[in-house]
Image 1: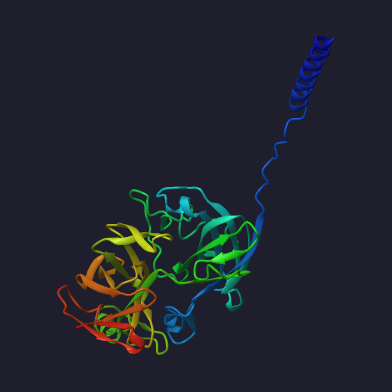
Image 2: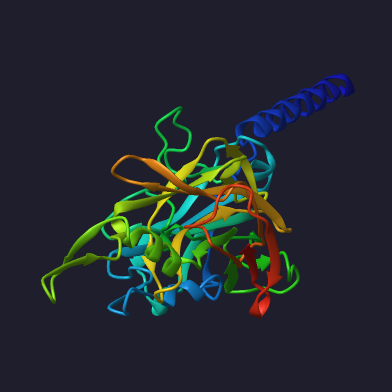
Length: 370
């Protein structure tokens, strides 16, 4: 009688084991999907350093009827902000970028700072900003090609032969800024300067990566005296034929870069990255006080230390393109954020003039051509 009882018990145990095995396969564990990244928001406060190179915005032309200044009514400020993940930003030639903002505002004192909301997923970013002038109503680039912050060239400078340099223009100045932020998964935003302190507003100071120089001639009265005797005209007040002062528009000034001119700049390295030979531009004789005349000026990309460019200045008579004077090669010292005055008797000098450098007020350079 015991043998059947043991057989039944063995059968029951086998059935229970089979049932338990089926139970495991019937209820598999649930696989949870990962949570999507949460976008975090911060405000980027851009501030332009507009105190740089502003002295010549108040030069009086001629008899004071008009002044040379920035044409606020015809230009706007264009703000461009891009975010790069840290890995992408360090990889040369990478085009991975998050376009955060690209827009224009009127150019006046109330728009020398701008607050821009940032909406970025959690991660670490290099925030790069570029601010430039564009003619009012312009959409996109004008003075610079901003398609790639790794290299911003002057617009058209990469053309083989047809480049026309836009000098004598206050609106060529631009500003650059860069900062690093980390957006945490819990919504906190930190800057590289304060990695342990959460912030809601990221401050960025933008400075110009340029220097500026001006050519001023000091011999206008001598030039007028020399050339007045060569062209008699009618004195309309008396009706009597008499020597008259020459028309300054009958002459043209050419400024030539005799060496390389920096022509492109990297927002990431904060340095010029390319240069071009054979660049020149035409100036204009604009009387300042009857004795001095501004002949031309330009903005130049420079690095953070003292540097220089080599230029020459030539005066031509328009009607026959005769060369009347030439300065020879001048080594113009430049420092970022400051301007250099180059003064001398350019209208009556000839090649081979000597050059002396004297420090001017407020630390500006004043190069005197003797």
